[in-house]
Image 1 (spheres, rainbow, N blue to C red):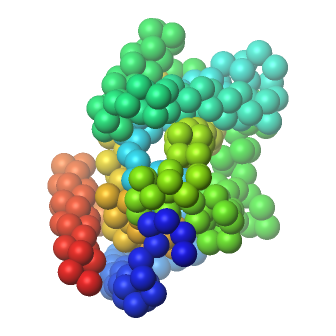
Image 2 (image 1 turned 180 degrees about the vertical axis):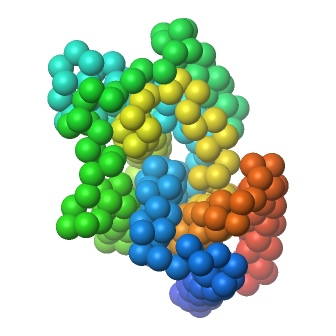
Length: 327
């Protein structure tokens, strides 16, 4: 039995709870689709479903990897600023070498550095993850504004890079395929690899994990590096979709990402969660946002709905925590 694992009977109940959460999310998505299909003649259409996929692709990619962070008992609030960093780095590099792969690679490397900064503060110095990543969020965002002079970088003349986020493969938007590929990859890693098992063990009990001989500091460093890499990759994708890199892009996105992961059944306290649940959480938020747009809901109404969903997600997580503690 791995450190942090529950006894078989308790583990079975936790798995049953996770299955119930996934079923509940699937039902909620189906109901939302039915309601919006009745309310708007434009909703139930394959092109609109592709629009939903494109809209959630960027944040969904980050949410997939954020599942790993939360399952491990960590937290990363710097994601929105790191997304902006990825877009700006990609835009700067594409302006020099005009190579989409090199631009995306540069963004990912910038993500590694941002993740190592977070890991240094959290793992080596011992700062609380919430405080540390809020601090790096402000620092990175401020550095981006100073670097760019708060001016966006246009990408209209770089067709190869624009195809990264706006292209199609066999009639399916490339952004949607990237989203699905990242979720499948994270699912495989968390389900079938030693790394995934160690992440769950770490979230269950860091002390027990360390006593079992697992290098906790290195594991957490890798997790935060992956988190930042996903954010800069998504930021480069968003710059491609927007045809420009904006220094203020993604402000507040970390809360939407967090809401999707928690809605999917991942515990804020770590040790429990599935990337399948996160995918459904992302999809539910995307369906709600798209449906409200089609119905002409004002921006403040959509903001209100997002706030309610976040409160609901945290409330559900608290009830899950109490229920699992009573098992």
